[in-house]
Image (cartoon, rainbow, N blue to C red; front, top):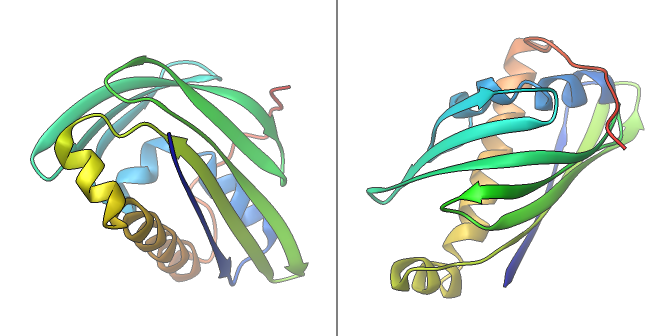
Length: 150
């Protein structure tokens, strides 16, 4: 199993950053390799990804969700094995630190080599940078889900 940890400071209030992160179907707008996400229930999402020409589909379950604090998930079926958490930390009224921690299992030779070369870490860092640009440019979230999963 491999791990990646990345964080970024965004120039929006914590509730704005958190609310946007709950809009899973918008992830393709800032996450490279994510083609589509379908929200199937409050706790189940279906992902379609394509990285370096390799397409994968999998379901992820939200295992914990606390408004303005955290969203945790794990894959429950499909072609990817991962689990992670995104946490939101209020820096001041207009700034938030977003931290992402993820454990994943690289399966193919290409994935294993990419992991050893730090490609997953760089992709995660790039995704967070694109999230920052996305939310700061908008200045507000595209929607929100304020329910809790514990």
